[in-house]
Length: 106
Image (cartoon, rainbow, N blue to C red; front, side, top):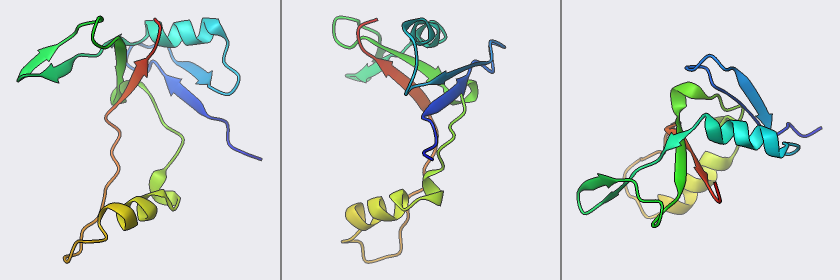
């Protein structure tokens, strides 16, 4: 049986919510959006937030949990094989959770 694509979130804000992306309702998606903050971007050495350029929200890594471990799958080996194949010295890729980005019509 496949593992649901789910995300526990809201730890920092003590809301402790959970969303299953395979069966989420519009209300649940609205709650996820409400738990996010504006996501700025870098342009010309500046940190900007401009909805006319990119309408995006973010959630910091401390505020959500991921149930997928890319190191336990063949994903990292596949990426390393593609990106690092021309390298002469031993190199590796280390996955790291940074933040959750939410894009779309908000």
